[in-house]
Amino acid sequence: MNLRWNLDALYTSFDAPEFAQDWQTYENEMKSLQEWAAVSLTETTDAAAKMEAYITKLTRSLQLQYKMMSFAELTVSTDAKNEKALQVIEQLEEKSVGLVEPSVLFQKWIGGVDNLDQVISSSALLEEHRFFLLENAAKSKHLLSDKEEILLAKMKNTGSNAWAKLQELLTSTLLVDITIDGEEKQLPLPVVRNMAYEKDANLRKTAYEAELRAYKKIEESSAASLNGIKGEVITIAKLRGYESPLAKTLDDSRMDMETLEAMLSAMRESLPAFRKYYRKKAELLGHQNGLPFYDLFAPMGEVNMTFTYQEARDFIVKHFGSFSEKLANYAATAFDNQWIDAEPREGKRGGAFCSNLHMIKESRILANFTGSYNDVSTLAHELGHGYHGDALVDETFLNSDYPMPIAETASIFCETIIANAAMKNATDEELFAILENDISGAGQVIVDIYSRYLFESELFKRRLEGSVPVKELKEIMLWAQKEAYGDGLDPNVLHPNMWTCKPHYYYADYNFYNFPYAFGLLFAKGLYAVYLQRGEAFVEQYDQLLSVTGKMNIADVAKIMDVDVRSVDFWRGSLRLIEEDIEKWISLK
Image (cartoon, rainbow, N blue to C red; front, side, top):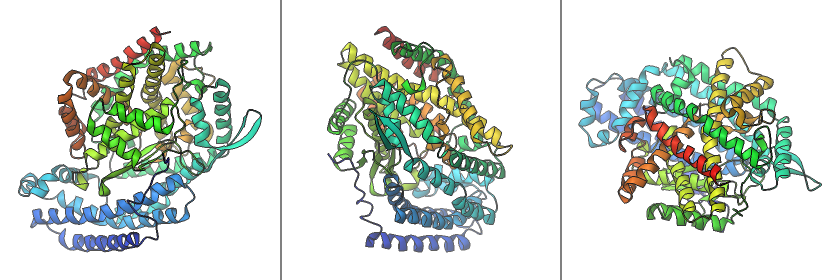
């Protein structure tokens, strides 16, 4: 099988006539929108007709912008030094500023429309976009002046966007000096980080130590990037009248503080169970002082849980089929049509992601596949994101954009399908290995994510007083890990540079890109429990839930399944499922 994706459905190259034509059309559409907004959005007469025109014009512009930007960003993600792609990204970022003025004008305009509900009800197109329109009206109170909004958008391109690109370049091109079997090598950072999943204990430790040494080459530059981005975020949140970056994140996430606090409270209550798991794993691996960080992902059991790419494909498609034929068919299509780039290589970014391409009704998935069961689980996770996108292809473009917390639901639901289906026919030894992988993943999403939430909260607090130096960043990270992991990890062998390698900290528009993972895991676990109760009837309802995530707030999406996300008991119920798995795993050894 081909382990590299094919982007031809977007464009065959940057020199393709289709790309040039779309570029010209995009410029024309954006100019048309700008001119129309300047003339039409000066008074609220004919409000329904103006809203319809805005939705139509904005959709045409955004679809073209997203198509071209997706092609460029996907290209860079596997070829960090591709000069043409980098140039296109920069040009599109500059041009996208042209959409700021009509968007600001519209938000301010719609905020002044009387009888908005009645106006929306008068048109099928407006009714379809009710949530989008009401959300724009609500956000109007956080807008600055037209000139200030345009200036901010332009400054971001030479501010946070530039810092983020620098950080991605630093980590994707960093070569790690490492000695393996007496041979000195220079390997890409993602390859060395993936060694954390190797069976060889010495190799795991060697890779961890080499990784930490390598960060010394880039940590000062990374710290500058991080401080630049977070400083900008604080300034903009304050200018817009938000109490804090977290308050803005919750608003953008269509989530309230009551929901976040209920979830965090349940997570804190569950930490002792996870620490028990880490101590047991440490004991089984021969450690006396808790689990050293380099053994956090050590595979457990004697079962050879390794896969070729073809085996991973067949495993995922088969077990997805135990849930629904539609999900299995989606996964098969993604594998068989080169929607996935799975080969680790120099110049390719680490980790994994899924890009849903609504405009062509496809997805593209990036992974760094080395054959471990964890890699299979990661592929299932990203395919879940893709399936979520597939559930939205019949929605309008403006109704296909869902917030971060709900974004992780389908992905973690798919991980759960894989783990539970695999465990049904497993031997005790296989069950031990599968459970361990599942619990390890849950630990990352509950315990490590909690440490990242603590880190980012403290970082924002200190950044208010000025730039935070490398030494302090490391200290904060170690403090956060100790708070979350407690005596589960060896306090002398932690990861002070986790802020360097995690790209989530460097997204200026997506701060606190940590608690959404916990929300996704626990919401998905809760949904899976509902699935086990309802069986076949659940599948259609689940697809419906995914299809409305772009046009509802999180609490209302959850109500489709009769779930109250503001209740700590819901989150406790989901965590109880993981705690039961921990006890089951411990009993097997």
